[in-house]
Image (cartoon, rainbow, N blue to C red; front, side, top):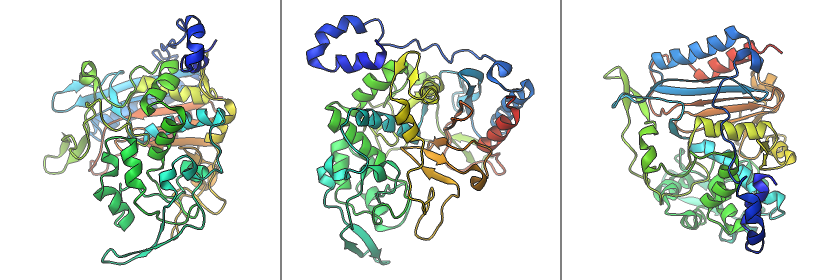
Length: 439
């Protein structure tokens, strides 16, 4: 019996009594991978290429483009490199380590997507269903058709309700408040949507804010994935964090991943830094005060950006996706669900970040909580067709190439100003890696 099956059985009260003895020995995965490097050759890269990658990332740190970094590259299930450089904190001079913890912010989104796809496999929702079927409070949303400089807004009824598919690919029309001076995004900031006490409060606030555009007409990064977390909670009957813990983190052996940092782990928690032009060096940023601390166990379980994780844990999640839903005997989702997640679902005329006035990013679309490179030539990318990726607000990033069975994850904590002339670490790493593949 695999881990995912055990977790499902343990969650069903009628079966728990007979299934417990079957599950005790297998509830937690052997999480040793990816503790050790197999090396460049074993993973299908040139030795010179991996040495160049490590040197380039070490230079990024030495140049003070970031305070510290952990990076991991794996191919065909073998770890080519898993290295670290620099500091968790410039104030305390604490070294960054392999088990440092990071605010992964929007890299939380793919985990939420996997959780929702698990419930899709259970037959609990469909892609073409209206979102309001699962979140009735969103049934009366209006569309902001225009507004003036004084903030006066003209609202119209939607031509139709946004669908689950549009919620998953950010074309439903919701705002976010991370940017934008329009009344919708201002309302997200003014009402403190992302500072809500819980997901119920978040939904109550979102229900009072109009959509930015008619569903399906544009792409706009949004609160959609926090709404997805609420739907997981409602359909499963569990707190969102409990669902993730029982159905994803435990089966995959992701013991360092959660919505807050435990007291015993604070020394491993990397701090956020930015470039200070006056002092001509990196400085540690003060903790933000507009939302609960990452040390607060009662903070919002944000499916869009709330998780803390380690490189090891997130690498296990990515390898599960490379393996099309399974890792070390734990089946999390089906191969078909993984393929759906990594397939562009935006309408033909719409690209990633495509709006009424911009064509967006050529050759790139969006699936289920991943950006997807469906045409690498148009995207000017060396990645294979179908490569999917995302990143976090503090600079963490990853990509998965399903043709090469390969992924890269980079963990940093940087926001705000960067050193003038700072290197583009993502493109530097990407180009070295693709030039180094031997097979």
